[in-house]
Image 1 (cartoon, helix red, strand yellow):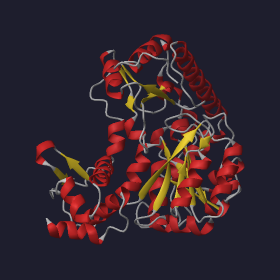
Image 2: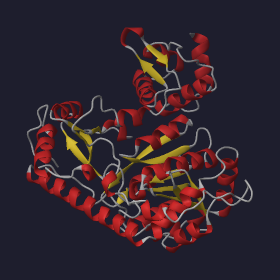
Image 3: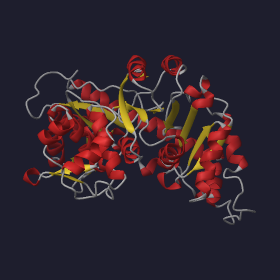
Length: 449
């Protein structure tokens, strides 16, 4: 046991809960602590490492949330099998049974996606590249992307969806032990991805204009930050879209630093907010990602990203060692969808329908005293008295929702659930009444604020 604690102590560079969590993570990733290794009791760790039991307990909580360790009652705490991964995402989408109205998924309504018939009828072959080192972006697609990109980027490339983009960006641009700012609440897979790479996650709250600039400045003042990850439009889960004023304020806060800005814009085509990016002010340090999954179909598996030429070159070089390039056949289909009048009209109609569904549900909730923030997107972020009780009550009525805890990065004094409003085709008043009643389950009788 003493040898085990000695290994952890050698990697402990700060006597804080995050420092201890990072030390244990390093020991696990370096295979010094193997899966199944039993960790000493909290008080023993605290005494041996000259830390408070509260500090060790907080570190153990962080490690448990990220799936590095697991606690099993009297059996104690052990190092988890790292093969599982994605713990937050699994918890966010963990609907145990099939429900009549599953609003936990965050996916678009398949009936609102544009049809492929007209576009596919124009394609005769899959095409053959002249070389496996041929450029990864079809010239026609790049020209279309540049027409309404939120700033003039040095370089663009295409990858296999937003998460592929985030994965290759973090792997090529960040290093072990870096500190990265993420939104609170934020998108669980992003936190899963960063923690899997042993990157320290720093939560900064989101308000009704986007990432809180004052809180970001405080985080930057405490220690260097390698990157900031934001969702500029229809933030998941809150539905908040960043204002131009806030974007400029964030750019001003970040300008004296070396922090990379990573933007995940997953609602292009479905957002009424014009495309926005900190790249307008920090072009050399911005990676802007645009996904077409929600607007044109998740199975297209396409996203575009922009960055400096040097960063894009590094990303493309890394991809050449794996998948090489994103299917040019799928890119040709996307070009067709982005230029076909009927497909364009279908995306506009989807945007209008999603807006209407969200408004109907939000307004109906307001009639029950449940106030929901944000302004657009597929999801709403609903405050509840007791998350678990609310989820169980709604499930008993055939309604599935996501627990809010996996979206939280900072301690949250109240509970939330994420509801995919974009999938509520009818019965808005009825579903809102059920959500409102569930929100108060567990003793909350006062008006939500």
